[in-house]
Every structure is written in structure tokens, then in C-alpha cells.
Length: 287
Image 1 (tube, one colour):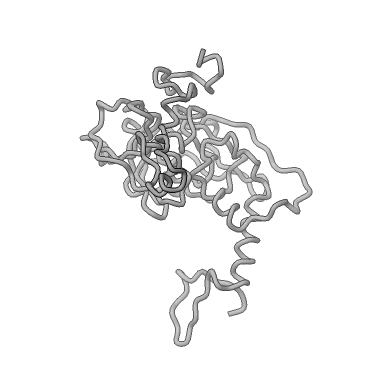
Image 2: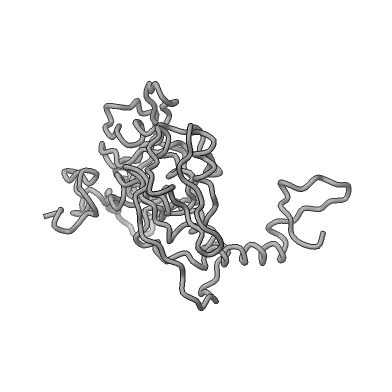
């Protein structure tokens, strides 16, 4: 075989040897693809709502170079609303077409797609039409980067400050099986559940996603299963815990208890409902 090929799409043959992580050629090919994807991608990670659950961020960390070799200007687009609750940030788009394919398969009439060609190609709607079908919000879940974001959650909180909980409700439109992103009793956003590979298990309707933001609307099943390698699973302090007894023997006295950092911090106070703040949270909101 003269070049690397996808092992999942290649017919098995006698004597075939499949090398993925052990092959220097494959590692170099992956690094080249990631570098190509990052050519026009802005460094928005500090302000992007997708940070912490971004596939491109993970690939960049694993295969990306420290600096880019691209010396030309990056393409830029204006942010537009392609739905009542969907914001399109085309600068971040990598043209994977996942949102287009999703709408083509689960909706009655797709109204958005890829316009123009080459370096001018972009995801958009025909003559500024809005995506307003009952399942339009699923394009947010399938987007691997922060190009399509939930306007009801935009700039409200980082995902690693929230706790994902599996929940369900009796919904006449969809399965009603969702993932709630909560802090305390406050529901910041609602998304579809994803499997271990980051793929949506069951698509949900817009009513569940955008309009059911109260815990009373849901039957909460319990915490979602999150990979230990994910930043989302980090920093979830639960009550207090005692330092291992071995420390007692080393320092010769009883150690202090480690407190929940949110019990002593003035940031993100529970009486402030961040999901109800219009626009980005500001320091004036915490006075």
C-alpha cells in the first residue's frame, strides 16, 4: 500500500498487519492533518464555549505543533444567527459537514448547507433563512468544534464548573433522554447524551433542549459517566474528605479537613442565577 489508509474502511487480506499508534508514518500523517485543520482556526479556546469538550482541542494537544507554518491571512466571517437559539461562528468551522448531514437525515427539510467553493466555502442558510425545525438544536451536539453554539448557554459557564447528570422526561416529540449540565440545583444547559466515542446516542427535540431548564421538569437518574481523562471530570469537590492516615504518622498530628472550595469562594455564588443573565456575565453581576 503506497500511502496510509483508514483501517476501518479497508478490506481484510491475508498477511495484513495494521499499525496505528505504533507507526511513525501514521503519527506524521495525523500531525499533518491536524496542522491543516488549524490553518484557519482561531485561538479562541479561552473564550470558546466548546473548550473542555472540543475534539479539535484534543487532537491539537496530541498531534499539534507549537507554532504554525502558515504565513497568510486567515479567512474571517461575521457571526450570524441561523436559528432562534443557535449562533454560527464560521471562523471556527472546519467544514466537516456533520451538521449538514444530521439535518439531512433527521429533519423534513434541510435549509442550510455549504455555500461557495474552495477557501471561500462556508456553512450557511439560503438567503438568511433560519433553521427552525423541531430538531435543529442537534447541530450543536454534533459540531466537533465551537462553530455552532447554544445561545441560551453562551458565555454562562465553563463545562468543567458544571456537573453532568443523566435525566429523562415523558416527551411527545423525542425520547426525552438527555444530559443536564448543573451547578447545585440550577440547570445551565440540556444536551443529548453521548457515548464513549463522543457520538450522540439519541437526538432530542428543541423543547427539551431550550425550554426545559428547571429540575422539576426532569426525572434525574444520576451522574453521567465521564472519562477520567476529560477535564469535565476534574474539580468536582463533594463535601469534605480526610487526608490519608499516613500523613498523621508523618507530621505527628491530626491534619485539617480539605474543604469544598465552593464553600469558601465568593465566585459563582449560588444565589446568583447565571443562566438568567442576558449576555456574558460581568463583574457587576456579583456585587
